[in-house]
Length: 271
Image (tube, rainbow, N blue to C red; front, side):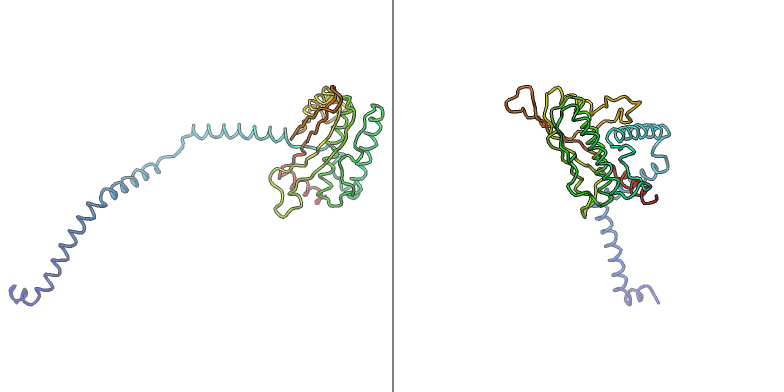
């Protein structure tokens, strides 16, 4: 078959192929003119990234510096935890060998009430004999643990009040963290609020607040030496008719961290 015969027989096919080739080059040219720059930039960025990935992102000095900073932050965090966490004295902690939690709570309450009553009578200071505890003794173990901690704080503040020469402690109110028995549960920081309404001289008030930040007791006889109490709020109102007397509402916090809650529950259950 001659070329002329092939052309006559297949010219439609040949023309279609030529048209396709022409359209391909035209399309490639258009795409390159529109997207070529972006494509080249993307390829260049990929190449740079691949080169960077071959080298370590951080040098040994960078890692050492990061470790030092992490150590400093960890140390600062531990100091903060130590300064805010409330650690109750041993006789305000549940002991599985000393009977039921409810009985331990009642004994602790009676012990504090008797101790403070004796000392306050000598100092002629009136105080709220409920000690801020609920009228009905708590029965849930998780609540008993918190009320015992609050009772420890109450005893300490009342002792400061007696030492400071306070006239009276009109009211004590203890409120557990709302999340304790809620569906949402506790947050990472649990707060039991203990509010005291006290009346006395401004000097006596100042002493209580100062001592709450650092116990004035002899460390040889009082293990609370150096334990600071967290103050959440202080509201001072001048007493009516007495210039040298003030009425103060001061709220202290018994702070628990999430890991403290888990540890205390686990310890009692294991015992």
